[in-house]
Amino acid sequence: MNKIANRTVICDVLMKKAEHDQDIVVLTSDSRGSASLAPFANAYPKQIVEVGIAEQNLVGIASGLAAVGKKPYVASPACFLTMRSIEQVKVDVAYSHTNVKLIGISAGVSYGALGMSHHSLQDIAVMSAIPNMRIVVPADRFETEKMMNLLVEDDEPCYIRVGRNPVEDIHENLDFDFEIGKGITLKEGNDGAFIATGEMVKKALDAAYLLEEEEIHVRVLNIHTIKPLDEEIIIKAALETKAIITMEEHSGVNGFGTMVSKVVAEHAPCFVKVMALPDSSLITGNSQQVFDYYGLNAVGAAEQMKKLLVKKHA
Figure 1 (tube, one colour):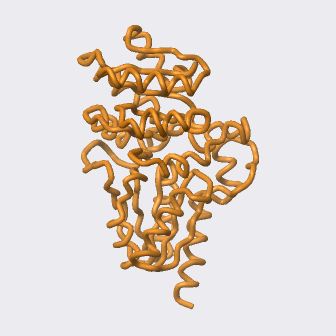
Figure 2: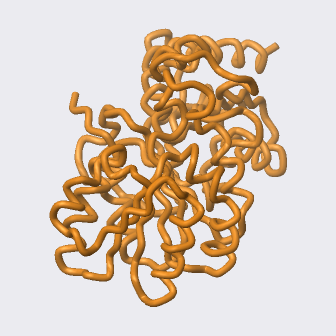
Figure 3: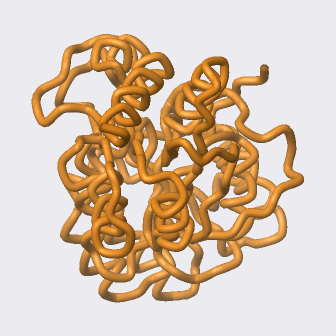
């Protein structure tokens, strides 16, 4: 199965679009290599701004460029972009409604071995609390391509959250419907439901197929847009399965699982288990080692679903 990093796809799309649109500008914080944007810089040296390690300036400059008609794409490690420059994101981008696309690279525990300072486990919680800020988290290269092609055509602020490492394909090709704000049902099933986002979608799908071997039929929902959240697809799963596990590469405090739980509690109460990273300083190691240590993998998800289904029928 092919494995391509979503950040590479972002660069590819921006290069294709920039060929015909000189208003597209990329801004980086000494991060063109980390963001896989060196090819863009080489091809369009007049359409890239290197700010250096100054994330507040990075967002402020991007907002200024947007105000004069440019289409800025800011690429910086998610841990720094969403923590160091959050006031500029809130005021200069979201409140001012500027056409700035914020690309948080190496999100979650992509920089796992570098420790807590480089983990980005609060960005969904913080960004989702800012009015006018959309949040998208693509699961594979095909979703990333479709997402970028749509975002290039609109003029609304957006936070794009991607990991560092290559990811396996969820889709076989580009032949699927993709709409910002609308989740995708990847697998049907009425015993329970995995509702996942980003790189956790593949783990949820693998867990569902492990359960299928035991004749436990679990639905898998891919929520690539965290804000605006597709409440309809979540409510439908809650009504039809009555047992939900959410999966995210983020803290379990006020993240994606919290948002799903709120929707379920208000519209169709059922058992919900939030699978996320703990509210503590994590171990260090590569991302898969971190996931495995905390049980955030296919085997762990399958076991949690079986426990939840037992509780449901107790």
